Amino acid sequence: MVKIEILDAKPVRRAPDNLPSSLRNYIDYRKSGLSLNHIVGCPLDCGYCVRHLFDNFAMKRPHLIVDDEVAVGELISHWAFRAHTTPIQIFNRATDPFLPGVKKHLFRTLEALDSRGFRNPVLVITRWKIEPADVERLEALTNLKLTILVTWSGIDDERIEPVSSGIAARSLEVLASSASRVKKILYWRPIISDLNDTTEHFAAARRLAEFADATVFTGLFYREEIRSYFREAGVPDLYADIARRKILPREAEGRILACFEGRPIFRKTSCGVAFAHSIADFNGHFGINEICDICPKTQREICEKHHRKPDLEAVRSLARVVSLVDLDGIEVSDRRVEVNGSTEAQRYFMQHALNFQVHDRAQPHRKHRHGRAEIGWE
Image 1 (cartoon, helix red, strand yellow):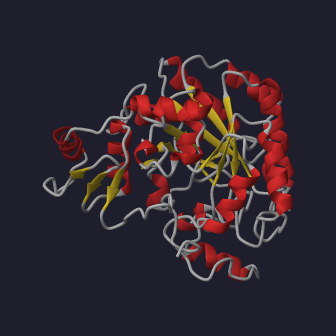
Image 2 (cartoon, one colour; image 1 turned 45 degrees about the vertical axis):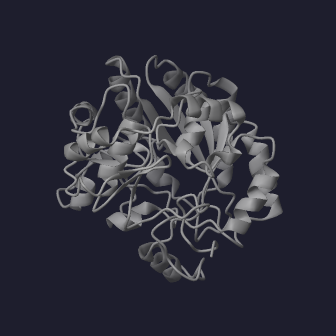
């Protein structure tokens, strides 16, 4: 289990000078927006954590790279930041934002953004304890569109997930009892075949969903570094192969949707966030209509109202902003913009500016896969 002595409320230490450059660079662009991670290190030891990919999993105590005001200043002066538009994530890559010692930095960061009048969507993901006093402070924000995504899996194998899922369940209940302006999502993940995809797990998720404004479900991010960690921990391979995208087989999705019939459940994070706030999806998934077929009618109507096929020259203008080389190779259809030779940061910036999907030809999105790995869909 998690070592409680690590989870004290002592001031967060300064980060060492020898941090990998991937962590020293504490602002990056991801699908759910600009990601701010000026604290690194986490004791929760979730075996599937992306920190494996940043050579940081061994750092158990959180460390501060720069002060909160400096981090906020860098964020809002970042080339990709657009006031009131760009989605923002805070402490989603290298720590848990509600750990003792970390959450005061979360509050300071949120308040610094809110006091400047920004109305951007902000996503905060946690699996740790949320107290009523935390919700009271979050509810005091007046501008940001804040969503708390509470990660819950129901996994009880401590080699994979040492933290009890009961902690996340209680946090969601606390949010449900006192949050109004702040929206709450049951972030049901990772769902792994033959591990936590039983009828009992599904029933537990449905009960928890009653405390949330929406449920988002997703599978396992299974890279070589994560598979190697599990092998060393004595965990048999969870899937026969690794994949660049998250793995969630077709059969599991079908059973999930059947279990959640009548409840708001979403395949994509931004779709659940949009529903919770009654706004259009900032990732523009509406053009990929097979993603949206499970969304409530009210949400489809909102997204349809804001869905506009972009002008090719407008797309090329954004491509110049992000320094895409092949402007002539850009194609625009009713479903998506397609480009060549792009990075994720380039695509996602364009996607959020357009509210329209942007894909790279080298990494095609197969119809009905919903942007997931091929495993379980062949």
